[in-house]
Amino acid sequence: MSDAATARRRGRGGGGAARRAERSAVSIETARYIERNIPNFEVLTEEALEIIEANAETVLEEIGVNFVDNPAALDRWREAGADVDGERVRLPKGLARKLCSTAPSQFTQHARNPERNVEIGGRNLVLAPVYGPPFVQDMNGGRRYATMQDFQDFVKLGYMSKWLHHSGGTVCEPTDIPVNKRHLDMLYAHMSLSDKPYMGSVTEPSRAVDSIEMSKILFGDQFVQDNTVMTSLININSPLTFDSIMMGALEHYAAHNQAAIISPFIVGGAMAPVSIAGTLTQVLAEVLAGVAYSQLIRPGAPVIFGAFVTSIDMNSGAPTFGTPEASHITMGAGQLARRLGLPYRSAGSFNGSKLPDAQAGYETANSLNMGLLAGVNFMLHSCGWLEGGLVSSFEKFVMDADQLGALHHFARGVSMDENAQAMDAIREVGPGGHYLGCAHTQANFKSSFWRSDLLDYKPFETWADEGSRDTMALANARVRKLLADYQQPALDPAIDEALRAFVAKRKEEMPDASY
Image (cartoon, rainbow, N blue to C red):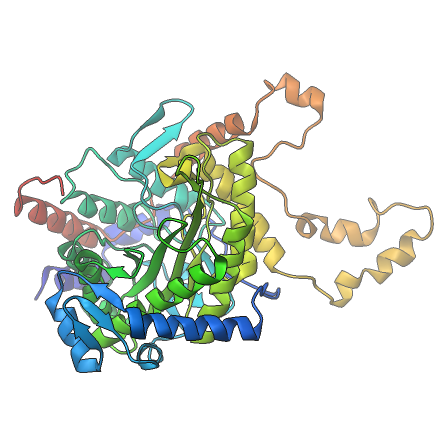
Protein backbone atom coordinates (compact mmCIF):
# COMPACT_ATOMS: atom_id res chain seq x y z
CA MET A 1 0.00 0.00 0.00
CA SER A 2 1.34 3.46 -0.89
CA ASP A 3 2.21 6.05 1.76
CA ALA A 4 -0.72 8.13 0.49
CA ALA A 5 -3.17 5.27 0.82
CA THR A 6 -1.83 4.36 4.26
CA ALA A 7 -2.19 7.93 5.47
CA ARG A 8 -5.70 8.17 4.06
CA ARG A 9 -6.73 4.90 5.67
CA ARG A 10 -5.36 6.01 9.02
CA GLY A 11 -7.07 9.37 8.66
CA ARG A 12 -10.43 7.80 7.91
CA GLY A 13 -10.15 5.59 10.94
CA GLY A 14 -11.50 8.48 13.02
CA GLY A 15 -8.44 9.02 15.20
CA GLY A 16 -9.06 10.92 18.41
CA ALA A 17 -6.30 13.44 17.63
CA ALA A 18 -7.96 14.35 14.34
CA ARG A 19 -11.36 14.79 16.00
CA ARG A 20 -9.90 16.92 18.79
CA ALA A 21 -8.08 19.09 16.24
CA GLU A 22 -11.28 19.59 14.29
CA ARG A 23 -13.32 20.52 17.38
CA SER A 24 -10.75 23.08 18.54
CA ALA A 25 -10.35 24.78 15.14
CA VAL A 26 -11.90 28.18 14.52
CA SER A 27 -14.29 28.30 11.57
CA ILE A 28 -13.29 31.05 9.14
CA GLU A 29 -16.10 32.51 7.04
CA THR A 30 -15.59 32.24 3.30
CA ALA A 31 -18.16 33.55 0.85
CA ARG A 32 -19.40 31.18 -1.81
CA TYR A 33 -17.95 31.80 -5.25
CA ILE A 34 -19.77 34.50 -7.20
CA GLU A 35 -22.82 33.45 -9.20
CA ARG A 36 -23.60 36.33 -11.53
CA ASN A 37 -27.10 37.67 -11.79
CA ILE A 38 -26.02 40.42 -14.17
CA PRO A 39 -25.43 40.29 -17.95
CA ASN A 40 -21.97 40.02 -19.45
CA PHE A 41 -20.75 43.11 -21.28
CA GLU A 42 -20.20 42.24 -24.94
CA VAL A 43 -18.11 44.58 -27.08
CA LEU A 44 -17.93 42.53 -30.28
CA THR A 45 -20.72 42.08 -32.82
CA GLU A 46 -21.52 38.72 -34.36
CA GLU A 47 -19.73 39.81 -37.53
CA ALA A 48 -16.61 40.81 -35.58
CA LEU A 49 -16.54 37.49 -33.76
CA GLU A 50 -16.82 35.55 -37.00
CA ILE A 51 -13.97 37.54 -38.56
CA ILE A 52 -11.69 36.91 -35.56
CA GLU A 53 -12.54 33.21 -35.50
CA ALA A 54 -11.84 32.88 -39.23
CA ASN A 55 -8.56 34.77 -38.91
CA ALA A 56 -7.47 32.56 -36.01
CA GLU A 57 -8.08 29.46 -38.14
CA THR A 58 -6.01 31.04 -40.90
CA VAL A 59 -3.16 31.69 -38.46
CA LEU A 60 -3.18 28.06 -37.36
CA GLU A 61 -3.34 26.71 -40.92
CA GLU A 62 -0.96 29.05 -42.74
CA ILE A 63 1.44 30.37 -40.09
CA GLY A 64 1.20 27.65 -37.45
CA VAL A 65 2.59 27.41 -33.94
CA ASN A 66 5.91 26.12 -32.59
CA PHE A 67 6.14 23.22 -30.14
CA VAL A 68 9.80 23.45 -29.16
CA ASP A 69 12.04 20.72 -27.70
CA ASN A 70 9.10 18.33 -27.54
CA PRO A 71 9.32 15.44 -30.08
CA ALA A 72 6.47 13.57 -28.38
CA ALA A 73 4.14 16.53 -28.90
CA LEU A 74 5.08 16.69 -32.58
CA ASP A 75 4.28 13.00 -32.92
CA ARG A 76 0.89 13.52 -31.31
CA TRP A 77 0.11 16.34 -33.72
CA ARG A 78 1.12 14.23 -36.74
CA GLU A 79 -1.17 11.44 -35.61
CA ALA A 80 -4.00 13.95 -35.18
CA GLY A 81 -3.66 15.16 -38.77
CA ALA A 82 -1.57 18.31 -38.39
CA ASP A 83 1.18 19.29 -40.83
CA VAL A 84 4.48 19.16 -38.88
CA ASP A 85 7.58 20.79 -40.37
CA GLY A 86 10.46 20.74 -37.92
CA GLU A 87 8.98 22.24 -34.77
CA ARG A 88 6.31 24.17 -36.67
CA VAL A 89 2.80 22.72 -36.41
CA ARG A 90 0.11 23.81 -38.86
CA LEU A 91 -3.45 22.76 -38.18
CA PRO A 92 -6.03 22.26 -40.94
CA LYS A 93 -9.06 24.46 -40.49
CA GLY A 94 -11.46 23.02 -37.97
CA LEU A 95 -9.04 20.52 -36.40
CA ALA A 96 -8.28 22.52 -33.27
CA ARG A 97 -11.91 23.44 -32.70
CA LYS A 98 -12.95 19.82 -33.12
CA LEU A 99 -10.41 18.68 -30.55
CA CYS A 100 -11.48 21.42 -28.14
CA SER A 101 -15.07 20.19 -28.23
CA THR A 102 -14.28 17.42 -25.70
CA ALA A 103 -13.19 19.89 -23.00
CA PRO A 104 -15.86 20.48 -20.31
CA SER A 105 -17.64 23.81 -20.13
CA GLN A 106 -17.69 23.69 -16.33
CA PHE A 107 -15.97 21.62 -13.65
CA THR A 108 -15.65 21.36 -9.89
CA GLN A 109 -12.31 21.93 -8.20
CA HIS A 110 -12.39 20.16 -4.88
CA ALA A 111 -10.88 21.57 -1.70
CA ARG A 112 -9.84 19.48 1.29
CA ASN A 113 -12.76 21.15 3.05
CA PRO A 114 -15.74 20.29 0.81
CA GLU A 115 -17.49 23.50 1.87
CA ARG A 116 -14.76 25.37 -0.04
CA ASN A 117 -15.24 23.52 -3.35
CA VAL A 118 -15.57 25.84 -6.35
CA GLU A 119 -17.44 25.54 -9.64
CA ILE A 120 -15.39 26.97 -12.50
CA GLY A 121 -17.41 27.90 -15.58
CA GLY A 122 -20.96 28.91 -16.39
CA ARG A 123 -21.91 32.22 -14.78
CA ASN A 124 -19.58 31.72 -11.84
CA LEU A 125 -16.51 33.72 -10.79
CA VAL A 126 -13.81 32.21 -8.58
CA LEU A 127 -11.31 34.66 -7.07
CA ALA A 128 -7.67 33.69 -6.45
CA PRO A 129 -4.75 35.80 -5.19
CA VAL A 130 -1.64 37.24 -6.85
CA TYR A 131 0.72 34.77 -8.52
CA GLY A 132 4.44 34.87 -9.23
CA PRO A 133 6.16 38.02 -7.87
CA PRO A 134 9.76 37.61 -6.66
CA PHE A 135 9.47 40.62 -4.34
CA VAL A 136 7.20 41.48 -1.43
CA GLN A 137 6.49 44.84 0.16
CA ASP A 138 4.99 46.17 3.36
CA MET A 139 5.21 49.32 5.47
CA ASN A 140 7.51 47.64 7.97
CA GLY A 141 10.12 45.97 5.76
CA GLY A 142 9.79 47.86 2.50
CA ARG A 143 10.46 46.18 -0.86
CA ARG A 144 12.54 43.02 -0.55
CA TYR A 145 13.02 39.55 -1.98
CA ALA A 146 10.30 37.19 -0.79
CA THR A 147 10.99 34.44 1.74
CA MET A 148 9.12 31.31 2.75
CA GLN A 149 7.83 33.15 5.82
CA ASP A 150 6.32 35.78 3.52
CA PHE A 151 4.75 33.00 1.45
CA GLN A 152 3.21 31.38 4.51
CA ASP A 153 1.86 34.73 5.70
CA PHE A 154 0.17 35.34 2.34
CA VAL A 155 -1.43 31.88 2.47
CA LYS A 156 -2.71 32.69 5.95
CA LEU A 157 -4.11 36.03 4.76
CA GLY A 158 -5.82 34.28 1.85
CA TYR A 159 -7.37 31.79 4.23
CA MET A 160 -8.63 34.60 6.46
CA SER A 161 -10.06 36.65 3.57
CA LYS A 162 -13.81 36.19 3.37
CA TRP A 163 -14.23 37.14 -0.28
CA LEU A 164 -11.35 35.05 -1.61
CA HIS A 165 -12.40 31.58 -2.73
CA HIS A 166 -9.06 30.07 -3.71
CA SER A 167 -5.65 29.82 -2.04
CA GLY A 168 -3.84 30.25 -5.37
CA GLY A 169 -0.33 29.09 -6.20
CA THR A 170 2.95 31.02 -6.14
CA VAL A 171 1.62 33.96 -4.13
CA CYS A 172 5.22 35.11 -3.99
CA GLU A 173 8.49 33.42 -4.96
CA PRO A 174 10.31 32.31 -1.77
CA THR A 175 13.89 33.04 -2.79
CA ASP A 176 15.42 31.63 0.41
CA ILE A 177 14.57 28.08 -0.75
CA PRO A 178 16.42 26.43 -3.68
CA VAL A 179 14.46 26.74 -6.93
CA ASN A 180 14.17 22.99 -7.44
CA LYS A 181 12.79 22.43 -3.94
CA ARG A 182 10.65 25.45 -3.10
CA HIS A 183 7.57 24.04 -4.86
CA LEU A 184 7.41 21.34 -2.17
CA ASP A 185 7.31 23.89 0.64
CA MET A 186 4.81 26.07 -1.23
CA LEU A 187 2.44 23.17 -1.84
CA TYR A 188 2.71 22.04 1.76
CA ALA A 189 1.89 25.57 2.93
CA HIS A 190 -1.28 25.66 0.82
CA MET A 191 -2.30 22.18 1.96
CA SER A 192 -1.65 22.70 5.66
CA LEU A 193 -2.24 26.42 6.33
CA SER A 194 -5.48 26.68 4.33
CA ASP A 195 -8.35 24.42 3.39
CA LYS A 196 -9.27 26.32 0.23
CA PRO A 197 -8.50 24.99 -3.28
CA TYR A 198 -4.94 25.49 -4.54
CA MET A 199 -2.77 25.41 -7.67
CA GLY A 200 0.02 23.02 -8.63
CA SER A 201 3.60 23.71 -9.73
CA VAL A 202 4.44 24.19 -13.42
CA THR A 203 8.08 25.34 -13.41
CA GLU A 204 9.36 21.89 -14.42
CA PRO A 205 7.44 18.74 -15.39
CA SER A 206 8.72 16.73 -12.41
CA ARG A 207 7.31 19.41 -10.12
CA ALA A 208 3.89 18.83 -11.61
CA VAL A 209 4.35 15.14 -10.75
CA ASP A 210 5.24 16.10 -7.17
CA SER A 211 2.10 18.24 -7.02
CA ILE A 212 -0.03 15.29 -8.10
CA GLU A 213 1.64 12.92 -5.63
CA MET A 214 1.20 15.33 -2.72
CA SER A 215 -2.44 15.81 -3.68
CA LYS A 216 -2.90 12.05 -3.57
CA ILE A 217 -1.59 12.06 -0.02
CA LEU A 218 -3.97 14.88 0.91
CA PHE A 219 -7.10 13.58 -0.83
CA GLY A 220 -6.41 9.89 -1.44
CA ASP A 221 -5.26 8.17 -4.64
CA GLN A 222 -8.69 7.22 -5.91
CA PHE A 223 -10.20 10.62 -5.18
CA VAL A 224 -7.53 12.36 -7.27
CA GLN A 225 -8.06 9.86 -10.08
CA ASP A 226 -11.77 10.61 -10.10
CA ASN A 227 -11.81 14.35 -9.34
CA THR A 228 -10.09 17.63 -10.11
CA VAL A 229 -8.22 18.96 -7.07
CA MET A 230 -5.80 21.39 -8.76
CA THR A 231 -6.03 24.20 -11.30
CA SER A 232 -2.60 25.19 -12.62
CA LEU A 233 -1.31 27.97 -14.86
CA ILE A 234 0.17 27.04 -18.25
CA ASN A 235 1.55 30.15 -19.93
CA ILE A 236 2.03 30.23 -23.68
CA ASN A 237 5.28 31.84 -24.79
CA SER A 238 3.56 34.38 -27.01
CA PRO A 239 3.65 34.80 -29.91
CA LEU A 240 2.61 31.31 -30.99
CA THR A 241 5.24 29.28 -29.08
CA PHE A 242 4.67 26.36 -26.72
CA ASP A 243 7.79 25.48 -24.71
CA SER A 244 8.60 22.03 -23.40
CA ILE A 245 8.56 23.08 -19.72
CA MET A 246 4.98 24.32 -19.71
CA MET A 247 3.79 21.60 -22.10
CA GLY A 248 5.47 18.95 -19.96
CA ALA A 249 3.56 20.18 -16.92
CA LEU A 250 0.34 20.32 -18.96
CA GLU A 251 0.86 16.76 -20.14
CA HIS A 252 1.04 15.46 -16.57
CA TYR A 253 -1.93 17.47 -15.33
CA ALA A 254 -4.15 16.62 -18.29
CA ALA A 255 -3.28 12.92 -18.05
CA HIS A 256 -4.40 12.96 -14.40
CA ASN A 257 -7.59 14.96 -15.07
CA GLN A 258 -6.26 18.03 -13.27
CA ALA A 259 -7.24 21.43 -14.63
CA ALA A 260 -4.96 23.76 -16.54
CA ILE A 261 -5.34 27.39 -17.55
CA ILE A 262 -4.09 27.71 -21.13
CA SER A 263 -3.04 31.33 -21.09
CA PRO A 264 -1.38 33.49 -23.75
CA PHE A 265 0.93 36.06 -22.15
CA ILE A 266 -0.02 39.20 -24.06
CA VAL A 267 1.81 42.50 -23.96
CA GLY A 268 0.22 44.48 -26.78
CA GLY A 269 2.84 46.00 -29.05
CA ALA A 270 5.53 43.55 -27.87
CA MET A 271 4.15 40.00 -27.92
CA ALA A 272 0.95 40.71 -29.86
CA PRO A 273 -0.23 43.31 -32.39
CA VAL A 274 -1.10 46.78 -31.16
CA SER A 275 -4.67 46.48 -32.48
CA ILE A 276 -7.46 44.90 -30.45
CA ALA A 277 -8.74 42.71 -33.30
CA GLY A 278 -5.22 41.49 -34.11
CA THR A 279 -4.49 40.66 -30.48
CA LEU A 280 -7.77 38.77 -30.12
CA THR A 281 -6.95 36.78 -33.25
CA GLN A 282 -3.59 35.72 -31.82
CA VAL A 283 -5.09 34.97 -28.39
CA LEU A 284 -7.73 32.72 -29.92
CA ALA A 285 -5.22 30.91 -32.14
CA GLU A 286 -2.92 30.22 -29.20
CA VAL A 287 -5.73 29.06 -26.92
CA LEU A 288 -7.18 26.81 -29.63
CA ALA A 289 -3.82 25.11 -30.13
CA GLY A 290 -3.13 24.76 -26.41
CA VAL A 291 -6.55 23.44 -25.46
CA ALA A 292 -6.54 21.08 -28.44
CA TYR A 293 -3.19 19.69 -27.31
CA SER A 294 -4.55 19.06 -23.80
CA GLN A 295 -7.35 17.04 -25.35
CA LEU A 296 -4.84 15.00 -27.35
CA ILE A 297 -3.37 13.99 -24.00
CA ARG A 298 -6.74 13.14 -22.46
CA PRO A 299 -10.10 13.94 -24.03
CA GLY A 300 -12.30 15.60 -21.43
CA ALA A 301 -9.41 16.97 -19.36
CA PRO A 302 -10.59 20.22 -17.71
CA VAL A 303 -9.06 23.38 -19.17
CA ILE A 304 -9.64 27.13 -18.94
CA PHE A 305 -9.38 29.65 -21.78
CA GLY A 306 -6.83 32.11 -20.41
CA ALA A 307 -5.87 35.64 -21.43
CA PHE A 308 -3.34 37.71 -19.52
CA VAL A 309 -3.62 41.09 -21.22
CA THR A 310 -1.61 44.26 -20.93
CA SER A 311 -0.24 46.89 -23.28
CA ILE A 312 3.16 48.55 -23.42
CA ASP A 313 4.23 52.11 -22.76
CA MET A 314 6.16 52.94 -25.91
CA ASN A 315 8.31 55.51 -24.07
CA SER A 316 9.59 53.32 -21.23
CA GLY A 317 8.81 49.81 -22.46
CA ALA A 318 6.95 49.12 -19.21
CA PRO A 319 3.61 47.29 -19.20
CA THR A 320 0.49 49.37 -18.54
CA PHE A 321 -2.67 48.28 -16.76
CA GLY A 322 -6.28 49.28 -16.30
CA THR A 323 -6.47 50.70 -19.82
CA PRO A 324 -9.51 50.87 -22.14
CA GLU A 325 -7.73 48.62 -24.64
CA ALA A 326 -7.20 45.94 -22.00
CA SER A 327 -10.92 46.09 -21.20
CA HIS A 328 -11.85 45.67 -24.86
CA ILE A 329 -9.56 42.65 -25.22
CA THR A 330 -10.68 41.10 -21.93
CA MET A 331 -14.35 41.47 -22.82
CA GLY A 332 -13.84 40.29 -26.39
CA ALA A 333 -11.88 37.24 -25.28
CA GLY A 334 -14.72 36.41 -22.91
CA GLN A 335 -17.12 36.30 -25.83
CA LEU A 336 -14.75 34.03 -27.77
CA ALA A 337 -14.38 31.71 -24.76
CA ARG A 338 -18.14 31.39 -24.32
CA ARG A 339 -18.55 30.55 -28.03
CA LEU A 340 -15.97 27.79 -27.55
CA GLY A 341 -17.86 26.54 -24.51
CA LEU A 342 -14.86 26.93 -22.19
CA PRO A 343 -14.42 28.51 -18.75
CA TYR A 344 -12.56 31.82 -18.94
CA ARG A 345 -9.63 33.24 -16.95
CA SER A 346 -8.56 36.87 -17.12
CA ALA A 347 -8.33 40.19 -15.22
CA GLY A 348 -7.07 40.78 -11.69
CA SER A 349 -5.89 43.54 -9.37
CA PHE A 350 -3.54 44.82 -12.09
CA ASN A 351 -1.58 48.04 -11.75
CA GLY A 352 1.86 49.41 -12.46
CA SER A 353 2.25 51.50 -9.32
CA LYS A 354 5.15 51.14 -6.89
CA LEU A 355 2.92 51.73 -3.85
CA PRO A 356 -0.72 51.01 -2.91
CA ASP A 357 -1.57 54.59 -3.91
CA ALA A 358 -4.11 56.38 -6.11
CA GLN A 359 -2.59 54.99 -9.31
CA ALA A 360 -2.82 51.48 -7.90
CA GLY A 361 -6.41 52.10 -6.83
CA TYR A 362 -7.62 53.47 -10.15
CA GLU A 363 -5.92 50.82 -12.27
CA THR A 364 -6.99 48.00 -9.96
CA ALA A 365 -10.61 49.15 -9.88
CA ASN A 366 -10.69 49.27 -13.68
CA SER A 367 -9.13 45.81 -13.92
CA LEU A 368 -11.36 44.13 -11.32
CA ASN A 369 -14.58 45.56 -12.70
CA MET A 370 -13.73 44.71 -16.29
CA GLY A 371 -13.20 41.11 -15.18
CA LEU A 372 -16.59 40.91 -13.51
CA LEU A 373 -18.35 42.44 -16.52
CA ALA A 374 -16.37 40.37 -19.04
CA GLY A 375 -17.74 37.09 -17.71
CA VAL A 376 -14.44 35.86 -16.24
CA ASN A 377 -14.83 32.53 -14.43
CA PHE A 378 -11.42 32.29 -12.75
CA MET A 379 -9.66 35.51 -11.73
CA LEU A 380 -6.05 34.95 -10.78
CA HIS A 381 -4.20 37.96 -9.28
CA SER A 382 -7.45 39.24 -7.75
CA CYS A 383 -5.60 40.70 -4.76
CA GLY A 384 -2.06 41.72 -3.82
CA TRP A 385 -0.60 42.67 -7.22
CA LEU A 386 1.76 45.65 -7.32
CA GLU A 387 4.44 47.11 -9.61
CA GLY A 388 3.37 45.30 -12.76
CA GLY A 389 3.45 41.91 -11.05
CA LEU A 390 6.97 42.21 -9.63
CA VAL A 391 5.70 42.71 -6.08
CA SER A 392 3.22 41.03 -3.77
CA SER A 393 2.11 43.75 -1.36
CA PHE A 394 0.75 42.81 2.05
CA GLU A 395 -1.21 46.03 2.42
CA LYS A 396 -2.60 45.88 -1.08
CA PHE A 397 -3.55 42.24 -0.57
CA VAL A 398 -6.01 43.16 2.17
CA MET A 399 -7.12 46.34 0.37
CA ASP A 400 -7.99 44.32 -2.74
CA ALA A 401 -9.47 41.41 -0.79
CA ASP A 402 -11.81 43.88 0.89
CA GLN A 403 -12.92 45.31 -2.46
CA LEU A 404 -13.73 41.82 -3.75
CA GLY A 405 -16.76 42.05 -1.49
CA ALA A 406 -18.06 44.87 -3.69
CA LEU A 407 -17.80 42.54 -6.71
CA HIS A 408 -19.88 39.93 -4.88
CA HIS A 409 -22.62 42.44 -4.11
CA PHE A 410 -22.67 44.02 -7.58
CA ALA A 411 -22.91 40.58 -9.20
CA ARG A 412 -26.12 39.86 -7.28
CA GLY A 413 -28.00 42.16 -9.59
CA VAL A 414 -31.25 43.91 -8.62
CA SER A 415 -33.83 42.02 -6.58
CA MET A 416 -37.45 42.59 -7.55
CA ASP A 417 -39.22 40.56 -4.88
CA GLU A 418 -41.94 42.08 -2.72
CA ASN A 419 -39.53 43.10 0.03
CA ALA A 420 -37.18 44.81 -2.44
CA GLN A 421 -40.06 46.81 -3.97
CA ALA A 422 -40.46 48.43 -0.53
CA MET A 423 -44.02 49.64 -1.19
CA ASP A 424 -44.91 49.29 2.50
CA ALA A 425 -41.98 51.56 3.40
CA ILE A 426 -42.98 54.18 0.87
CA ARG A 427 -46.54 54.14 2.25
CA GLU A 428 -45.34 54.30 5.86
CA VAL A 429 -43.03 57.29 5.36
CA GLY A 430 -45.08 59.29 2.87
CA PRO A 431 -44.24 62.84 1.70
CA GLY A 432 -41.63 64.75 3.72
CA GLY A 433 -40.74 61.91 6.09
CA HIS A 434 -37.53 59.92 6.45
CA TYR A 435 -36.76 56.23 6.29
CA LEU A 436 -34.28 55.84 9.20
CA GLY A 437 -36.84 54.56 11.67
CA CYS A 438 -39.37 52.82 9.43
CA ALA A 439 -40.02 49.10 9.76
CA HIS A 440 -38.55 48.22 6.35
CA THR A 441 -35.25 49.97 7.14
CA GLN A 442 -34.98 48.34 10.55
CA ALA A 443 -35.60 44.92 9.03
CA ASN A 444 -33.17 45.26 6.13
CA PHE A 445 -30.40 47.79 6.88
CA LYS A 446 -27.82 45.20 7.97
CA SER A 447 -27.86 43.45 4.61
CA SER A 448 -28.95 46.16 2.18
CA PHE A 449 -25.61 47.95 1.68
CA TRP A 450 -22.15 46.53 1.18
CA ARG A 451 -19.74 48.02 3.68
CA SER A 452 -15.98 47.85 3.61
CA ASP A 453 -14.21 46.18 6.53
CA LEU A 454 -11.18 48.38 5.89
CA LEU A 455 -11.99 51.84 4.56
CA ASP A 456 -12.61 54.80 6.86
CA TYR A 457 -16.10 56.36 6.98
CA LYS A 458 -15.70 58.27 10.25
CA PRO A 459 -16.07 62.04 10.74
CA PHE A 460 -12.92 64.10 10.27
CA GLU A 461 -12.53 64.80 13.99
CA THR A 462 -12.68 61.10 14.90
CA TRP A 463 -10.29 60.22 12.07
CA ALA A 464 -7.83 62.86 13.25
CA ASP A 465 -8.07 61.75 16.88
CA GLU A 466 -7.24 58.19 15.80
CA GLY A 467 -4.01 59.26 14.11
CA SER A 468 -5.14 60.52 10.66
CA ARG A 469 -4.33 57.14 9.15
CA ASP A 470 -4.45 56.76 5.37
CA THR A 471 -5.62 53.57 3.67
CA MET A 472 -2.15 52.02 3.59
CA ALA A 473 -1.82 52.49 7.37
CA LEU A 474 -5.27 50.99 7.92
CA ALA A 475 -4.33 48.05 5.70
CA ASN A 476 -1.08 47.49 7.56
CA ALA A 477 -3.02 47.29 10.83
CA ARG A 478 -5.47 44.85 9.26
CA VAL A 479 -2.64 42.62 8.01
CA ARG A 480 -1.23 42.42 11.53
CA LYS A 481 -4.65 41.70 13.05
CA LEU A 482 -5.51 38.96 10.55
CA LEU A 483 -2.17 37.23 11.08
CA ALA A 484 -2.56 37.52 14.86
CA ASP A 485 -6.08 36.05 14.70
CA TYR A 486 -5.13 33.25 12.31
CA GLN A 487 -5.74 29.69 13.46
CA GLN A 488 -4.67 26.80 11.33
CA PRO A 489 -7.49 24.67 9.88
CA ALA A 490 -7.57 21.12 11.17
CA LEU A 491 -5.58 18.56 9.18
CA ASP A 492 -5.48 14.86 10.02
CA PRO A 493 -2.14 14.23 11.77
CA ALA A 494 -1.48 11.08 9.73
CA ILE A 495 -1.91 12.98 6.48
CA ASP A 496 0.23 15.83 7.74
CA GLU A 497 2.95 13.36 8.71
CA ALA A 498 2.83 11.74 5.28
CA LEU A 499 3.07 15.10 3.52
CA ARG A 500 6.06 16.12 5.61
CA ALA A 501 7.75 12.79 4.94
CA PHE A 502 7.21 13.14 1.18
CA VAL A 503 8.68 16.66 1.17
CA ALA A 504 11.72 15.55 3.19
CA LYS A 505 12.31 12.50 1.00
CA ARG A 506 12.10 14.47 -2.26
CA LYS A 507 14.48 17.11 -0.95
CA GLU A 508 16.99 14.44 0.05
CA GLU A 509 16.84 12.90 -3.42
CA MET A 510 18.21 15.96 -5.25
CA PRO A 511 20.97 18.50 -4.67
CA ASP A 512 20.10 22.16 -4.39
CA ALA A 513 19.75 23.88 -7.77
CA SER A 514 19.05 27.42 -8.97
CA TYR A 515 16.84 26.37 -11.88
